Length: 425
Image (cartoon, rainbow, N blue to C red; front, top):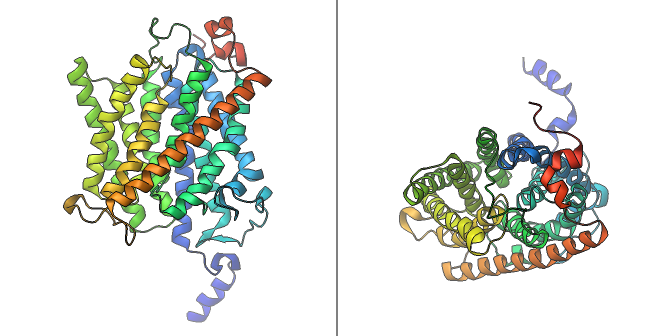
Protein backbone atom coordinates (compact mmCIF):
# COMPACT_ATOMS: atom_id res chain seq x y z
CA UNK A 1 0.00 0.00 0.00
CA UNK A 2 2.84 2.37 0.89
CA UNK A 3 4.52 1.73 -2.48
CA UNK A 4 1.28 2.43 -4.31
CA UNK A 5 0.80 5.72 -2.45
CA UNK A 6 4.36 6.82 -3.17
CA UNK A 7 3.90 5.95 -6.84
CA UNK A 8 0.75 8.06 -7.02
CA UNK A 9 2.44 10.98 -5.29
CA UNK A 10 5.31 10.82 -7.75
CA UNK A 11 2.87 11.49 -10.58
CA UNK A 12 1.96 14.90 -9.11
CA UNK A 13 3.87 17.99 -10.31
CA UNK A 14 7.06 18.43 -8.36
CA UNK A 15 6.23 22.11 -7.86
CA UNK A 16 3.43 20.98 -5.53
CA UNK A 17 6.10 20.00 -3.05
CA UNK A 18 8.44 22.93 -3.65
CA UNK A 19 10.72 23.35 -0.68
CA UNK A 20 9.72 26.23 1.57
CA UNK A 21 6.15 26.66 0.39
CA UNK A 22 3.51 26.31 3.08
CA UNK A 23 0.32 25.03 1.51
CA UNK A 24 -2.01 26.26 4.24
CA UNK A 25 -0.55 29.77 4.22
CA UNK A 26 -0.64 29.88 0.44
CA UNK A 27 -4.28 28.78 0.33
CA UNK A 28 -5.24 31.41 2.91
CA UNK A 29 -3.51 34.27 1.08
CA UNK A 30 -5.07 33.13 -2.20
CA UNK A 31 -8.46 33.43 -0.51
CA UNK A 32 -7.56 36.75 1.12
CA UNK A 33 -6.48 38.18 -2.22
CA UNK A 34 -9.89 37.43 -3.68
CA UNK A 35 -11.58 38.99 -0.63
CA UNK A 36 -9.56 42.21 -0.92
CA UNK A 37 -10.31 42.55 -4.63
CA UNK A 38 -13.99 41.97 -3.77
CA UNK A 39 -13.77 45.05 -1.57
CA UNK A 40 -13.17 47.24 -4.63
CA UNK A 41 -15.03 45.25 -7.27
CA UNK A 42 -17.90 45.30 -6.64
CA UNK A 43 -17.96 46.34 -2.94
CA UNK A 44 -16.59 49.88 -3.04
CA UNK A 45 -18.02 50.48 -6.53
CA UNK A 46 -21.54 49.69 -5.29
CA UNK A 47 -21.06 51.58 -2.02
CA UNK A 48 -19.88 54.74 -3.77
CA UNK A 49 -22.23 54.27 -6.73
CA UNK A 50 -25.29 54.26 -4.50
CA UNK A 51 -24.11 57.35 -2.60
CA UNK A 52 -23.98 59.65 -5.63
CA UNK A 53 -26.90 61.01 -7.65
CA UNK A 54 -28.38 58.73 -10.30
CA UNK A 55 -26.94 60.80 -13.15
CA UNK A 56 -23.40 59.95 -11.97
CA UNK A 57 -23.59 56.31 -10.94
CA UNK A 58 -21.89 54.92 -14.05
CA UNK A 59 -19.07 57.46 -13.76
CA UNK A 60 -18.25 56.14 -10.28
CA UNK A 61 -18.47 52.50 -11.36
CA UNK A 62 -16.28 53.25 -14.38
CA UNK A 63 -13.69 55.03 -12.26
CA UNK A 64 -13.43 52.09 -9.84
CA UNK A 65 -13.12 49.56 -12.66
CA UNK A 66 -10.65 51.61 -14.68
CA UNK A 67 -8.48 52.36 -11.64
CA UNK A 68 -8.37 48.64 -10.83
CA UNK A 69 -7.10 47.86 -14.32
CA UNK A 70 -4.59 50.70 -14.62
CA UNK A 71 -3.14 50.17 -11.15
CA UNK A 72 -2.72 46.44 -11.87
CA UNK A 73 -0.61 47.21 -14.93
CA UNK A 74 1.45 49.88 -13.18
CA UNK A 75 2.01 47.57 -10.22
CA UNK A 76 3.46 45.02 -12.65
CA UNK A 77 5.68 47.55 -14.40
CA UNK A 78 7.12 49.57 -11.54
CA UNK A 79 4.84 49.86 -8.49
CA UNK A 80 5.83 46.61 -6.81
CA UNK A 81 9.50 47.34 -7.37
CA UNK A 82 9.33 50.80 -5.77
CA UNK A 83 7.38 49.39 -2.84
CA UNK A 84 9.17 46.11 -2.11
CA UNK A 85 12.48 45.83 -3.96
CA UNK A 86 15.69 46.43 -2.05
CA UNK A 87 16.62 50.08 -2.18
CA UNK A 88 17.19 52.82 0.35
CA UNK A 89 15.09 53.96 3.30
CA UNK A 90 12.66 55.85 1.08
CA UNK A 91 12.33 54.09 -2.28
CA UNK A 92 12.78 50.58 -3.56
CA UNK A 93 15.12 50.06 -6.49
CA UNK A 94 14.00 49.08 -9.99
CA UNK A 95 15.42 45.59 -9.63
CA UNK A 96 11.86 44.20 -9.78
CA UNK A 97 10.93 46.24 -12.86
CA UNK A 98 8.33 44.29 -14.85
CA UNK A 99 8.46 41.77 -11.99
CA UNK A 100 11.95 40.67 -12.98
CA UNK A 101 12.93 37.64 -10.95
CA UNK A 102 9.37 36.81 -9.92
CA UNK A 103 8.99 33.24 -11.11
CA UNK A 104 6.88 30.22 -10.31
CA UNK A 105 9.56 29.08 -7.87
CA UNK A 106 10.45 32.39 -6.17
CA UNK A 107 9.20 32.82 -2.62
CA UNK A 108 8.19 35.63 -0.30
CA UNK A 109 8.52 34.02 3.09
CA UNK A 110 6.78 30.68 2.72
CA UNK A 111 4.29 31.69 0.02
CA UNK A 112 4.93 32.17 -3.73
CA UNK A 113 6.23 35.64 -4.48
CA UNK A 114 3.73 35.88 -7.32
CA UNK A 115 0.97 35.56 -4.73
CA UNK A 116 2.52 38.23 -2.52
CA UNK A 117 2.68 40.52 -5.57
CA UNK A 118 -0.99 39.90 -6.28
CA UNK A 119 -2.09 40.30 -2.66
CA UNK A 120 -0.30 43.63 -2.39
CA UNK A 121 -1.70 44.64 -5.78
CA UNK A 122 -5.23 44.47 -4.39
CA UNK A 123 -4.21 46.95 -1.67
CA UNK A 124 -2.73 49.22 -4.32
CA UNK A 125 -6.02 49.02 -6.23
CA UNK A 126 -8.37 49.97 -3.42
CA UNK A 127 -6.34 52.91 -2.12
CA UNK A 128 -6.69 55.28 -5.12
CA UNK A 129 -10.22 53.93 -5.65
CA UNK A 130 -11.10 55.16 -2.16
CA UNK A 131 -10.09 58.69 -3.20
CA UNK A 132 -12.85 58.72 -5.82
CA UNK A 133 -15.21 59.66 -2.98
CA UNK A 134 -13.39 62.96 -2.50
CA UNK A 135 -14.02 64.33 -5.98
CA UNK A 136 -17.04 62.30 -7.14
CA UNK A 137 -19.49 63.87 -9.61
CA UNK A 138 -17.17 66.59 -10.91
CA UNK A 139 -13.74 65.40 -12.07
CA UNK A 140 -13.00 64.54 -15.69
CA UNK A 141 -12.60 60.84 -16.36
CA UNK A 142 -9.27 61.45 -18.10
CA UNK A 143 -8.07 63.46 -15.11
CA UNK A 144 -9.10 60.69 -12.71
CA UNK A 145 -7.04 58.16 -14.65
CA UNK A 146 -3.92 60.33 -15.01
CA UNK A 147 -4.05 61.50 -11.41
CA UNK A 148 -4.52 57.96 -10.06
CA UNK A 149 -1.64 56.60 -12.15
CA UNK A 150 0.85 59.25 -11.06
CA UNK A 151 -0.37 59.13 -7.46
CA UNK A 152 0.19 55.38 -7.24
CA UNK A 153 3.84 55.75 -8.25
CA UNK A 154 4.66 58.99 -6.41
CA UNK A 155 2.63 58.54 -3.22
CA UNK A 156 1.34 55.03 -2.56
CA UNK A 157 4.37 52.97 -3.60
CA UNK A 158 6.97 55.04 -1.68
CA UNK A 159 4.93 55.08 1.54
CA UNK A 160 4.38 51.33 1.21
CA UNK A 161 8.17 51.00 1.05
CA UNK A 162 8.57 53.22 4.12
CA UNK A 163 6.29 51.00 6.19
CA UNK A 164 6.33 47.46 4.75
CA UNK A 165 9.19 47.35 2.26
CA UNK A 166 12.15 47.79 4.60
CA UNK A 167 11.96 51.59 4.73
CA UNK A 168 12.60 54.03 7.52
CA UNK A 169 9.22 53.87 9.27
CA UNK A 170 9.29 50.09 9.40
CA UNK A 171 12.83 50.19 10.76
CA UNK A 172 11.70 52.71 13.37
CA UNK A 173 9.12 50.21 14.57
CA UNK A 174 5.87 51.76 13.31
CA UNK A 175 2.87 49.57 14.09
CA UNK A 176 0.74 49.37 10.96
CA UNK A 177 -0.49 45.85 10.51
CA UNK A 178 -2.72 46.23 7.47
CA UNK A 179 -2.67 49.80 6.22
CA UNK A 180 -3.62 52.58 8.65
CA UNK A 181 -0.90 54.78 7.18
CA UNK A 182 -0.32 53.00 3.87
CA UNK A 183 -3.98 52.83 2.82
CA UNK A 184 -6.32 54.91 4.97
CA UNK A 185 -4.28 58.01 5.79
CA UNK A 186 -2.94 58.17 2.24
CA UNK A 187 -6.40 57.82 0.68
CA UNK A 188 -8.04 60.13 3.21
CA UNK A 189 -5.51 62.94 2.91
CA UNK A 190 -5.35 62.53 -0.88
CA UNK A 191 -9.13 62.82 -1.11
CA UNK A 192 -9.16 65.88 1.16
CA UNK A 193 -6.56 67.69 -0.94
CA UNK A 194 -8.39 66.74 -4.14
CA UNK A 195 -11.71 68.00 -2.76
CA UNK A 196 -10.12 71.34 -1.91
CA UNK A 197 -8.26 71.75 -5.22
CA UNK A 198 -11.15 70.64 -7.45
CA UNK A 199 -13.69 72.62 -5.46
CA UNK A 200 -17.21 71.78 -4.30
CA UNK A 201 -20.05 70.49 -6.42
CA UNK A 202 -22.48 73.08 -7.72
CA UNK A 203 -25.12 73.54 -5.05
CA UNK A 204 -23.06 72.10 -2.23
CA UNK A 205 -24.57 73.18 1.12
CA UNK A 206 -27.57 74.78 -0.64
CA UNK A 207 -29.07 71.90 -2.63
CA UNK A 208 -29.84 68.50 -1.07
CA UNK A 209 -27.75 65.72 -2.64
CA UNK A 210 -28.99 62.52 -1.00
CA UNK A 211 -27.78 59.06 -2.07
CA UNK A 212 -29.85 57.85 -5.00
CA UNK A 213 -29.87 54.13 -4.05
CA UNK A 214 -29.45 53.17 -0.41
CA UNK A 215 -30.07 49.51 -1.20
CA UNK A 216 -26.93 49.57 -3.33
CA UNK A 217 -25.02 51.38 -0.58
CA UNK A 218 -25.89 48.79 2.07
CA UNK A 219 -25.09 45.94 -0.33
CA UNK A 220 -21.67 47.40 -1.08
CA UNK A 221 -21.05 48.06 2.61
CA UNK A 222 -21.79 44.41 3.41
CA UNK A 223 -19.23 43.32 0.83
CA UNK A 224 -16.68 45.66 2.37
CA UNK A 225 -17.26 44.16 5.83
CA UNK A 226 -16.77 40.62 4.54
CA UNK A 227 -13.83 41.55 2.32
CA UNK A 228 -12.07 43.26 5.21
CA UNK A 229 -11.48 39.85 6.78
CA UNK A 230 -9.05 39.17 3.95
CA UNK A 231 -7.66 42.70 4.15
CA UNK A 232 -6.67 42.45 7.82
CA UNK A 233 -6.54 38.69 8.36
CA UNK A 234 -4.54 38.18 5.19
CA UNK A 235 -1.96 40.71 6.33
CA UNK A 236 -0.66 38.09 8.77
CA UNK A 237 0.58 36.33 5.60
CA UNK A 238 -0.11 33.03 7.33
CA UNK A 239 -3.00 30.80 8.34
CA UNK A 240 -2.38 31.07 12.07
CA UNK A 241 -3.52 32.59 15.33
CA UNK A 242 -2.43 36.09 14.29
CA UNK A 243 -4.75 35.94 11.27
CA UNK A 244 -7.62 34.60 13.37
CA UNK A 245 -7.20 37.28 16.03
CA UNK A 246 -6.92 39.99 13.37
CA UNK A 247 -10.25 38.90 11.91
CA UNK A 248 -11.89 38.70 15.33
CA UNK A 249 -10.83 42.20 16.39
CA UNK A 250 -11.74 43.55 12.96
CA UNK A 251 -15.28 42.25 13.35
CA UNK A 252 -15.60 43.53 16.92
CA UNK A 253 -14.43 47.03 15.99
CA UNK A 254 -16.79 47.19 13.01
CA UNK A 255 -19.72 46.09 15.16
CA UNK A 256 -18.86 48.52 17.96
CA UNK A 257 -18.51 51.48 15.58
CA UNK A 258 -21.75 50.55 13.84
CA UNK A 259 -23.72 50.52 17.09
CA UNK A 260 -21.98 53.66 18.39
CA UNK A 261 -22.66 55.69 15.24
CA UNK A 262 -26.25 54.44 15.05
CA UNK A 263 -27.13 55.43 18.62
CA UNK A 264 -25.13 58.67 18.47
CA UNK A 265 -27.11 59.71 15.39
CA UNK A 266 -30.35 58.51 16.99
CA UNK A 267 -29.80 60.70 20.04
CA UNK A 268 -28.50 63.72 18.13
CA UNK A 269 -30.98 63.80 15.25
CA UNK A 270 -33.92 61.75 16.46
CA UNK A 271 -33.65 58.80 14.07
CA UNK A 272 -30.96 56.29 13.12
CA UNK A 273 -30.29 56.11 9.39
CA UNK A 274 -29.05 53.27 7.24
CA UNK A 275 -26.45 55.64 5.76
CA UNK A 276 -25.08 56.53 9.17
CA UNK A 277 -25.07 52.94 10.33
CA UNK A 278 -23.02 51.64 7.39
CA UNK A 279 -20.72 54.67 7.54
CA UNK A 280 -20.03 53.82 11.17
CA UNK A 281 -19.15 50.30 10.12
CA UNK A 282 -16.60 51.56 7.58
CA UNK A 283 -15.14 53.89 10.21
CA UNK A 284 -14.70 50.98 12.59
CA UNK A 285 -13.04 48.88 9.92
CA UNK A 286 -10.66 51.61 8.84
CA UNK A 287 -9.71 52.48 12.41
CA UNK A 288 -8.93 48.92 13.50
CA UNK A 289 -6.86 48.21 10.38
CA UNK A 290 -3.43 49.41 11.62
CA UNK A 291 -4.00 47.84 15.05
CA UNK A 292 -5.64 44.58 13.99
CA UNK A 293 -2.56 42.40 14.37
CA UNK A 294 -1.53 43.84 17.71
CA UNK A 295 -4.60 44.37 19.91
CA UNK A 296 -6.98 42.06 21.73
CA UNK A 297 -10.79 41.84 21.63
CA UNK A 298 -11.44 44.27 24.50
CA UNK A 299 -9.07 46.82 22.99
CA UNK A 300 -10.85 46.44 19.66
CA UNK A 301 -14.15 47.23 21.36
CA UNK A 302 -12.75 50.52 22.68
CA UNK A 303 -11.23 51.34 19.28
CA UNK A 304 -14.56 50.73 17.57
CA UNK A 305 -16.47 52.95 19.99
CA UNK A 306 -13.85 55.69 19.60
CA UNK A 307 -14.09 55.39 15.80
CA UNK A 308 -17.85 55.83 15.89
CA UNK A 309 -17.67 58.98 18.01
CA UNK A 310 -14.60 60.64 16.47
CA UNK A 311 -15.40 59.95 12.82
CA UNK A 312 -19.06 60.98 13.28
CA UNK A 313 -17.97 64.41 14.49
CA UNK A 314 -15.24 64.65 11.87
CA UNK A 315 -17.85 64.30 9.11
CA UNK A 316 -19.84 67.21 10.57
CA UNK A 317 -16.76 69.39 11.07
CA UNK A 318 -15.37 68.87 7.57
CA UNK A 319 -18.66 69.67 5.85
CA UNK A 320 -20.28 72.25 8.11
CA UNK A 321 -17.36 74.08 9.71
CA UNK A 322 -14.72 73.92 6.98
CA UNK A 323 -17.29 73.62 4.14
CA UNK A 324 -15.14 71.15 2.22
CA UNK A 325 -17.04 68.98 -0.25
CA UNK A 326 -15.34 65.67 0.45
CA UNK A 327 -18.34 64.19 -1.31
CA UNK A 328 -18.41 60.71 0.22
CA UNK A 329 -16.58 61.49 3.48
CA UNK A 330 -13.27 59.85 2.64
CA UNK A 331 -11.10 61.95 4.92
CA UNK A 332 -13.32 62.02 8.04
CA UNK A 333 -13.92 58.26 7.81
CA UNK A 334 -10.73 56.79 6.35
CA UNK A 335 -8.22 59.56 7.04
CA UNK A 336 -9.32 60.36 10.58
CA UNK A 337 -10.01 56.68 11.26
CA UNK A 338 -6.54 55.72 10.01
CA UNK A 339 -4.91 58.37 12.19
CA UNK A 340 -6.93 57.36 15.25
CA UNK A 341 -6.23 53.65 14.78
CA UNK A 342 -2.53 54.20 14.20
CA UNK A 343 -2.25 56.16 17.45
CA UNK A 344 -4.40 53.77 19.50
CA UNK A 345 -2.38 50.79 18.28
CA UNK A 346 0.44 51.97 20.53
CA UNK A 347 -1.86 51.92 23.55
CA UNK A 348 -3.84 48.72 23.11
CA UNK A 349 -0.93 46.67 21.80
CA UNK A 350 0.59 46.89 25.26
CA UNK A 351 0.50 43.76 27.40
CA UNK A 352 0.11 45.78 30.60
CA UNK A 353 -3.56 46.80 30.38
CA UNK A 354 -5.30 43.83 31.93
CA UNK A 355 -8.27 42.67 29.88
CA UNK A 356 -7.50 45.43 27.38
CA UNK A 357 -3.99 44.09 26.71
CA UNK A 358 -2.78 43.24 23.25
CA UNK A 359 0.04 41.14 21.87
CA UNK A 360 2.75 43.24 23.53
CA UNK A 361 5.11 45.94 22.32
CA UNK A 362 8.62 45.35 21.02
CA UNK A 363 11.33 44.63 23.56
CA UNK A 364 12.30 47.80 25.37
CA UNK A 365 9.36 49.81 24.04
CA UNK A 366 6.87 51.56 26.27
CA UNK A 367 3.48 53.01 25.42
CA UNK A 368 5.03 56.49 25.47
CA UNK A 369 7.94 55.58 23.19
CA UNK A 370 5.64 53.72 20.81
CA UNK A 371 3.23 56.67 20.71
CA UNK A 372 6.11 58.87 19.57
CA UNK A 373 6.87 56.47 16.72
CA UNK A 374 3.19 56.36 15.75
CA UNK A 375 2.91 60.16 15.75
CA UNK A 376 6.00 60.42 13.55
CA UNK A 377 4.49 57.90 11.13
CA UNK A 378 1.20 59.78 10.97
CA UNK A 379 2.87 63.18 10.51
CA UNK A 380 5.30 61.95 7.84
CA UNK A 381 2.56 60.20 5.89
CA UNK A 382 0.17 63.15 6.13
CA UNK A 383 2.83 65.62 5.00
CA UNK A 384 4.13 63.60 2.05
CA UNK A 385 0.64 62.79 0.80
CA UNK A 386 -0.63 66.36 1.12
CA UNK A 387 2.32 67.97 -0.66
CA UNK A 388 2.77 65.44 -3.46
CA UNK A 389 -0.97 65.07 -4.09
CA UNK A 390 -1.28 68.84 -4.45
CA UNK A 391 1.59 68.92 -6.95
CA UNK A 392 0.10 66.05 -8.97
CA UNK A 393 -3.32 67.71 -9.11
CA UNK A 394 -1.85 71.00 -10.29
CA UNK A 395 0.18 69.16 -12.93
CA UNK A 396 -2.86 67.26 -14.20
CA UNK A 397 -4.91 70.47 -14.22
CA UNK A 398 -2.26 72.20 -16.32
CA UNK A 399 -2.07 69.31 -18.80
CA UNK A 400 -5.70 68.29 -19.34
CA UNK A 401 -7.79 70.12 -16.74
CA UNK A 402 -9.34 68.58 -13.66
CA UNK A 403 -12.99 69.52 -13.73
CA UNK A 404 -15.86 69.04 -16.14
CA UNK A 405 -17.74 72.12 -17.29
CA UNK A 406 -20.70 73.48 -15.35
CA UNK A 407 -23.04 72.28 -18.08
CA UNK A 408 -21.57 68.76 -18.00
CA UNK A 409 -21.81 68.65 -14.22
CA UNK A 410 -25.45 69.71 -14.38
CA UNK A 411 -26.30 67.11 -17.01
CA UNK A 412 -24.39 64.37 -15.21
CA UNK A 413 -21.12 62.59 -15.90
CA UNK A 414 -22.75 59.37 -17.08
CA UNK A 415 -24.08 60.82 -20.29
CA UNK A 416 -21.44 63.51 -20.84
CA UNK A 417 -18.38 61.33 -20.14
CA UNK A 418 -19.57 57.88 -21.20
CA UNK A 419 -22.66 58.39 -23.41
CA UNK A 420 -24.58 55.99 -21.17
CA UNK A 421 -27.10 56.14 -18.35
CA UNK A 422 -27.37 53.96 -15.30
CA UNK A 423 -31.09 53.48 -15.52
CA UNK A 424 -33.31 53.21 -18.61
CA UNK A 425 -36.71 53.91 -17.06
